[in-house]
Image (cartoon, rainbow over all chains, first blue to last red; front, side, top):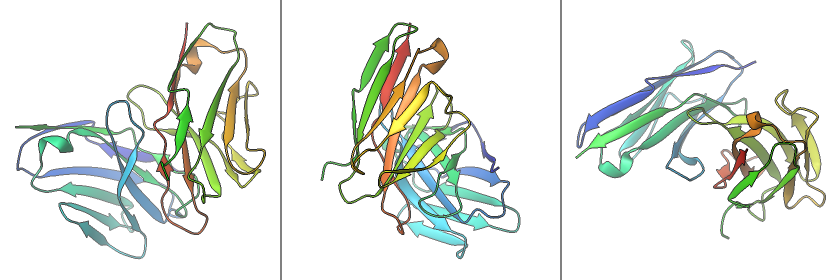
Length: 112
Length: 113
């Protein structure tokens, strides 16, 4: 089955700097790669996703890149703000609404 | 629409007791998923439904766990004879078949003492 690995497990950045979180996956049949943000006491919230037919997608300060050949994808957050502090999860699945396999998460701390 | 609703938010139970959680998905969503999340880990898939049909169950779903979605709307997850290892956050999510991405609820945190 699919296995998703995520690095780093913790990340601290100064406010205004960029943050990058990387994930690798094992199943070449996976075609959908979402990123979720989870704040304390809440469920994961979808922040951006990418499908296998594109290499990059951007939404304001957040971007995701995908390399299907190497089976890795990354989340880039620019101009970080204290409210970006949370746990971020990458995930992979075959389609957009089949079960997701999640990474173990990255705890991002943005220091003001 | 208020999103995916889960009840209760917190549940403390004694080992050996049975517990039941409820999930109300976004009304037009026909797919409903259950995940379990332990501290410091990502969510792990348990099972999912399309309308009232249970399409897939993870190996994590032991025979003490049962999930239903009798009318294709809300769903319940029951754990019988709870064990301390069942302590976790139980997350529900829903989606519309054919669309990408799904919406999670805030979860039910179970503590078995």
